[in-house]
Length: 455
Image 1 (cartoon, rainbow, N blue to C red):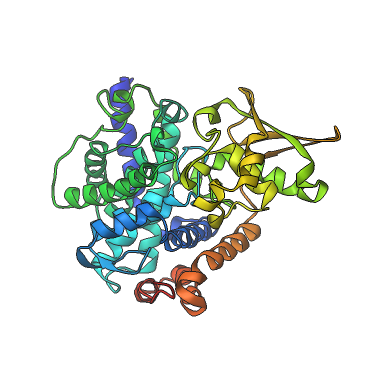
Image 2: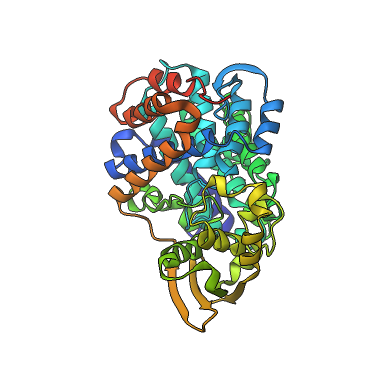
């Protein structure tokens, strides 16, 4: 019997929910588990290092209710919902968190804060580390399929998938920790769909990370409501009045039902080397590689040929705030050439007002090419004497496992050691790496509560 498109949508959500509900740790390939652990390390590093950001200070003021869940920016103990909100903001605000090209989602930023808060709320001895990792993988793979099914139209329409799709990953992960079956996960998705919100208009402002924090909180809340028996539509994502249709575009619902073991999206995760929008990374990589071949004061023009898509993503010509700087190809190019880095400390009020950086920013010219892939960039540097240096890069290629592991750990130490100190950073890194052993979560929770070296 042929199914109508509406019936197919219902079946697709049921199939995906069943996969998410029935996933067991022993089914997850070891390299996928390794990548999940790296996602934990990378996201915790970015979150803990976020304490100086203005929106994080606001979150700390608002999420002050007492609880037993760790607020990563300052180590305070708050309620699960407050932790999910605050940590979702912290995970994303530096624009240093992981990314998945197929779905257009920063997958761990809304997901890990939600599952971590739910796990801490249940206590260190209630769940084992394998349960936490399985919940994370289920959330990651489900949101990846939902995002991929709606890509690229969803992003092109102006939505921010990290928030609008991330809420479903968060709901899935928390549902697993609450022992939900596929029906419970679908109901959690139905409740999440009512709260799925996020706009690219927020880029370059505090609103961008705020909507990711809200996705983490909403996913947690939806899973809790569903676990308590709340009813919700079972086709709220792909159905005729569901998320994809209501937001004005269709979805390739067959993508949502690809078995996990046929495509583990975790293997495609990209980990950032620069604390800025991923659309700037290819240009930054090229310009960093060219620094030894030129004198900065000899640069006459920097021509960046970039995908048409980035015109509305990271093309702010003259940033006036650090957050705007993260979404400026011109400013990040100037940072790469002048300072030789695009780390978290490079995006400051001092930097956006630096005369030398401002002068170099004005020398950047953007050329848009519809044929380029989303993370591909051609760089052409013209020197005063007429010489031209040209090079291209594509930042969408995942690193090899050994390179990735080394990079993620080096990045973690650089971000966390100034906050937790050498001993605290090492203790937390060891606890996260130990999740694969299958013990309880007491070491992890203890390490998350470590005293901050800077207050």
